[in-house]
Length: 95
Ligand SMILES: [Zn+2]
Image (cartoon, rainbow, N blue to C red; front, side, top):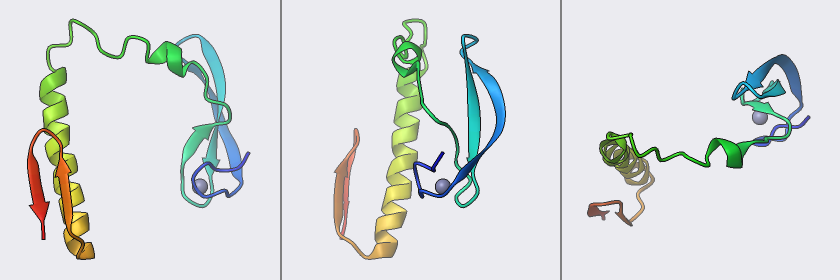
């Protein structure tokens, strides 16, 4: 198969079970290192109940990840010298 990221040839490296139901062959890209299966399946099944009512930390994790993402984007755009405004639960701008 070809890599979804860089289009290089991937080689099968191992097979494994996904969600204890499906068997898939994992392929490694020799150029960028992406590990991937050829035909992703079961995503709708896997994400059908991604938000569990018993998960009391989901809001805190999302706020924390929003801050981290904001810092990474701010660092990237400040290095690139771009002007940028983004709203992720908080608002800021770089000039
Ligand atoms: Zn690749």
